[in-house]
Length: 343
Image (tube, rainbow, N blue to C red):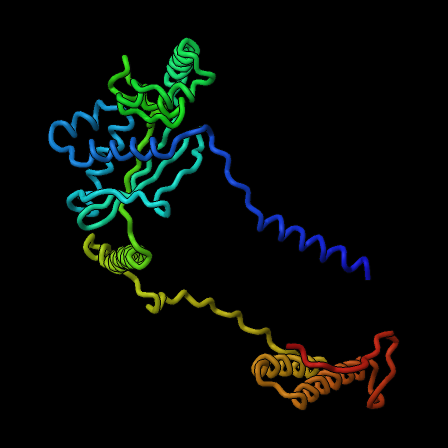
């Protein structure tokens, strides 16, 4: 009983392990609000670019500019999304996931007049921002120690000048992030660099199924049209020899008869007992050949009997005038057990 319980317990343990899912560790630490704001700015800057500017960005711009301009241009021409309305950044719509190149993908919904558009931007960590952050943090620590504060966070929360500039006073990290990104800094830097942009119109499940059915119908129609065209070409090939002046021989046309060879005449049959036996054999062969297809067992026995009689008559003629018995023993060791028809 215990041996039977072991496999069951193992299966239950596997199901429990598969049901437990661990939270995915991000490729690097990031602020969701900053990524969302940066993605919104990309949509705002490139969703309505047209004309010469669009051609320039598509040919000479960076990867972000090329991807954004081409994506929104295709959304307008192919999907007819219409005029830009706003953003949908609710928690059930915005997604964050790790990329395959050590990046983080931020995806939001841009609402247009006719159809929503999902914009996904790939971000990588900005090393320049990290270097600037360390420099500004050291300087902020120095100001905090000179002002008599025990920690940098306390200095940020109680310093009046920082609050008057309108920056966040929640913590030193929040203040420095906003300050380095703002125009009040000597050289503004964003913490995450966008490297790729993907724009795709949002379709419902019913619309996707309908489009798939349309594509399948068009594909099958093209295939059948091509097959019909090939069959028509094969049918017309039979008229090509006539156009070239050559005759076509039909499959059922009779072939020219070959000259029939004359069969040699049979030699005259000698008279006497030998002649009789030869005549009997010849006659039996002719009858057998004439009725080879429809011969019966009775006819086969009659032919064999006639052949035996002819053979015995020949033996009697060679022995002398004394009439031999109807059947004489033979010195041959061959014994006939049965007679079967050969097909």
